[in-house]
Image (tube, rainbow, N blue to C red; front, top):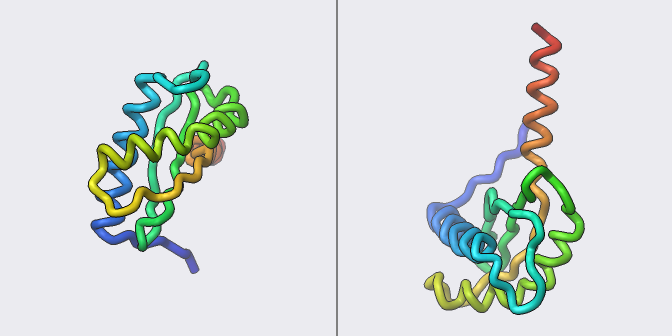
Length: 118
């Protein structure tokens, strides 16, 4: 039995808007304190049904410095929420939690298994 999440159109739309704004912030790399040494891709944003929480999946270029990047992004959450409040039309800006996107690693493992099978 597989468990799949189903998201409403609103959750998907809000998640995509948040993803675009966060990606733009990270591309600019204009932070109030410090900077990202490695480019970071925002791969997906999952928003809770009440739009109060958002899981932000990121992947640093080459997978380097993952823990430091997560720490930095967590420190900059207030700054990013402030910008989100200005750019995304929501009553409340969701709480952001940053996670490393593991799907690239999983896809690579599946690819290796398939190559071994043939």
